[in-house]
Length: 153
Image (cartoon, rainbow, N blue to C red; front, top):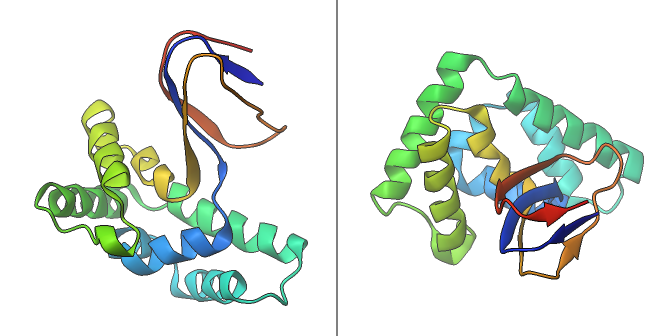
């Protein structure tokens, strides 16, 4: 558990599959990092109610692994395209790429240029805590602290 003492921002836990699927359909730079068969299997799982929890974990793991292990030249090129598009106003804010998400991706790229982790806001929940609020991090749950130096576990 993390308790915010000052304003605090983090990425914590995976977004629901349908949200990730929407980003994969809206953000070509992200989708291009995933092999076609992995992408199609994920999109099918995200839109189907027939997949069990175990299968959902498998398809999520496959997408996350594909992104995080994408060849460096590929992800750097796609990240530069994405940031350029966002800085140029090319985000589809009415369809899901909110201004908050656009701003976060641009900010993360400024802080961590050409880092594959800049793609994580499309996969992980973006959490903003006020002082006194808390989040619980389950065992093995992916997370990243983005802002706020004063928190207590």
